[in-house]
Image (cartoon, rainbow, N blue to C red):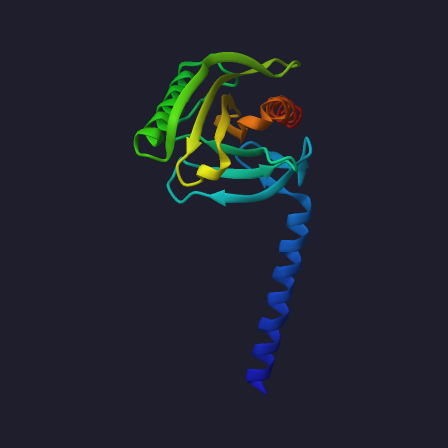
Length: 197
């Protein structure tokens, strides 16, 4: 009798966890580091999941994908630093941006990307107009070594500070889809700006 009760209790708890997970999935992801809820759909990008990193300071990443194939990954982290100012102008944000740029170049050197080109670097763009919030932008073009069938890929790196965190977006698309990809990039960043108020 006791075993039956224990098994029944675990069965009920299991279903409660499934239901709770389904409810959370319907709401998207709440990120306590910046007190912001990320919806299931953001500028027509669909939420694909969240990854929490084990190493302190590396934070979390959120994956989104647009129906036309444009992918966006958002990283929220602080590297253990305190007092990261909002926007693009601070030395901390400039250094984080440069580190991210160098990481991309290192990935190419390690063979993950081939024939990488820097299309532009360190441009300042608006994330939102009021109150003003700006980000640093760099563009890249390359081949993904493991996926030669994809052809040339274009990718944007966008980084800014917000609520004592670095916010980094990587948005990528096939070069053949560059016009739509660039438009989706602008839409995605603007939608993030609307969330971060």
